Image 1 (cartoon, rainbow, N blue to C red):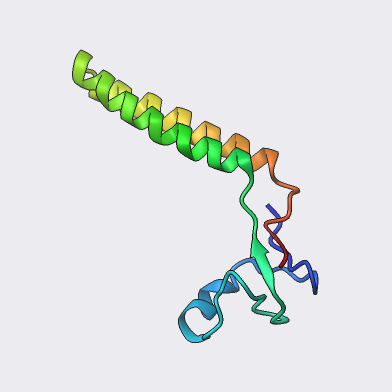
Image 2 (tube, rainbow, N blue to C red; image 1 turned 180 degrees about the vertical axis):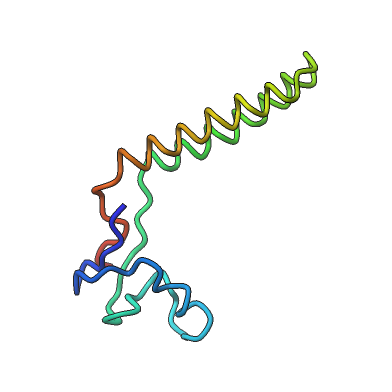
Length: 101
């Protein structure tokens, strides 16, 4: 995912960590480089995979309680969630994280 500022087109990757502690500006509403207004963009694929992973974890724990297979359940749930997050990350690799506010 690209984390460039939509105004100055410079990468903001890792810039918010410093601003979170010291600046009085909201770190998701202003670019730490140029100071102009930005908006955090959340894509539907990200929301869907997060909700699905929560539901899958709940179902996995229910299944493990019913059938008694805790280790296989943890391995399968971990592999499915990791794969789904990697696929969404790969799918959104050229999308812009921030937009002009």
